[in-house]
Image (cartoon, rainbow, N blue to C red; front, side):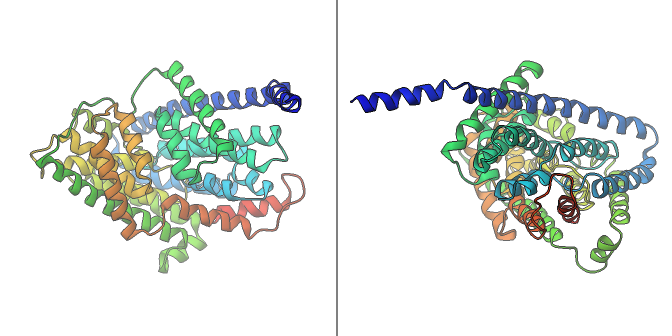
Length: 459
């Protein structure tokens, strides 16, 4: 009895340890910092898109120079100054969670790369690239929390991974103002598991990031609000149509990016290997042509088009979904930093609005949401995350069951085309690039670390 009392007293003393509370305080402050950076990033992204519109105001053909030059500059800076910052940022975060070499993790989630990720994503938006800021926010959040974790527990790789996971989840929660989706995203996409030792850190980071976002930005919904419903009956044919179209489109998009990560075939592949900056300029030219053909609808995140479609205040052209998909593919293949979350949701909204014409028994607003969740689930192959993101972003719980059913069906269709989830497949490439380099044992900034960064720049 006395020994049991002593154990309980020691445990209670451990909970009151100043060192433990110091770590907790640092974690909480880091989570708040992630939210602040995410909010600042969001406002800067809006300013970058505003600058882009100003540059093209009354002169739409300026894009033929702006996009190639901007993407070439971004690709050059990515390879020479910020290697490892290319692409979405989510694959890098997943790779970091699987690496056992702390120095290699530092190379993937360094403050330098986080700064480059933000600056170069803004540059891409200012040049009309079809990219989003949400994926980059995940890598930025993971980098901030990793920096704190390295100082708090330098000898505990498991706890450092928990901090990285929490940072990525907090980044999503703050970027979309979707706390539930942030938690599920950490479980379903980033870690593919839920370890009890890190669950408290993840939940705390997401809650604090959510509170900070709520306090500074208000209780906003990313794509506005909609009261659309889909009652059981003939209108449910829209679930099947959206799942099929979204799953096919998302699966094809993912398959293209996964295949491209292994190297483009033929002349395009040789051009990319020998002249990556020239290849980025050609991608910029293709992006400009797509923008001119679409009347400017394919530039940027697609946020304005998607929000207008969701709220029923705007229509998009019948070919918008295809054009936006192509613009996003070209932007990603160019090698510049930028995410695919917002563009994918815009593509899905376009699919839903077009399919609504085929299902007169279903409200258009409901079909739009089904299209969004179907395409997004087809791209990321994370149906629960897709459902929660769309549900929270539109403040619509009435559509939970139809959204979940559509997401699950679209996931199955996508898997028939792309056997491996997009982010996980790309993470394997990043992990392999790091693993092939010698293990750095010298301080940060040595040739060994530079070798890792050079390898990452070729991914």
